[in-house]
Amino acid sequence: MRSIIYEMQEITDERLELADKEGNYYLGPNLTLRRCTVVTRVSARWLNILPTRFIDCTIEAKQELKNSTWTCAALKGCSFKGRMTGCDFGPWPDYTEGWEHGTVEDCDFSETRLSNCRFHGCDTRTLRLPPWPCFTLLDPLGRSRELNSLGWPDLFGRIVIKNLSKHPPSTVALSYHAPTVAKQYETTEEALRAVIEKSGFIVS
Image 1 (cartoon, one colour):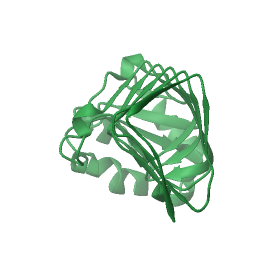
Image 2 (cartoon, rainbow, N blue to C red; image 1 turned 180 degrees about the vertical axis):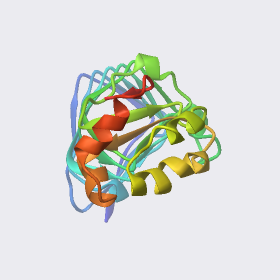
Image 3 (tube, rainbow, N blue to C red; image 1 turned 30 degrees about the vertical axis):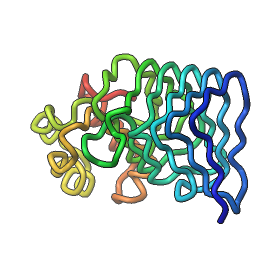
């Protein structure tokens, strides 16, 4: 693999295609992308997001990003598109060097399929979260008791909801994809929807 590094510069109004299957991409440190379109066609393993400022950018995941960590990225006014699984956004204290640079504000995830993704240390009121069949638990640690009382389908309730306290204290929202949850935890989208509609602090 060859390293492809964007660092120590500001790039404005450009399209970045991260598509080289032989490339190990590094965004940052000290990189600012302003009004850029960033298209990723590589796995998260080869996408290293170091302290970088994304301002009014569009990020398109043409290949599903699994376990991609955006905790060092300062995201302001950005739009996300594509499929993202197991990803983290926002400042996660002490998770990795540079975490203190992480922010997520005024961003639009409404065209993103978020599955088992977390938001840390941000104000979710500034975010557009994906609609059904995705759903997002707001303040899952603070509302753990209430969430546990909603009567979720058996496996999802016992394995996911019962263990909300095991997420990092910085977690302010958890996003799931109902068809994926239904398949993984032997339930149905309808059963999940019935529970979600009982709550005022689940976005769908």
